[in-house]
Length: 209
Image (cartoon, rainbow, N blue to C red; front, side, top):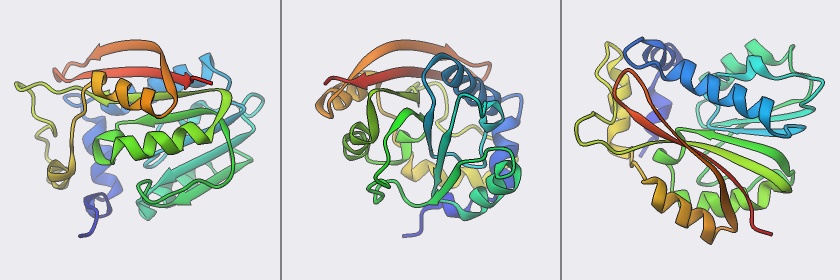
């Protein structure tokens, strides 16, 4: 079965995420901006990068290596056009992260915003723990379950509804257990609720050893 992410045009994705009633574009961008400013980001991996939301906050004097990974070639083409001339050491990888085994590199910062809802979290966390430098951190953004709020908001961009069958919301408690089993520990825990009523967990994890 084709991955639904391959059937969502970039214009639909960005349009949906930027709508005031969704407002996840600016939220995710702000979370990445905060992560880049707060943590060592000399080497940075952006998992599920889409069209590169937040890469405008990269400071080349601080971040020397960027790997952007996504399954959708159209998204990555847009990212390349926007940022290749602005981020000197930008590596762009088109792959399904369920299958990707890494490129032999390790990272000081790994960011995964609204990614684990669409992938098998346990196996991916085990891989991420091997991609982190010993003192590196992973920042994750998870959408939290709420029976009163739809998983995918109703907007004019109906192609986003294709995601509903593969979108599995994981509780932060279960995620923390999976991270622990993968050799990572939670360092920070934050919660945010947007105007849409959707709530999100933002967790920061480091290696246990």
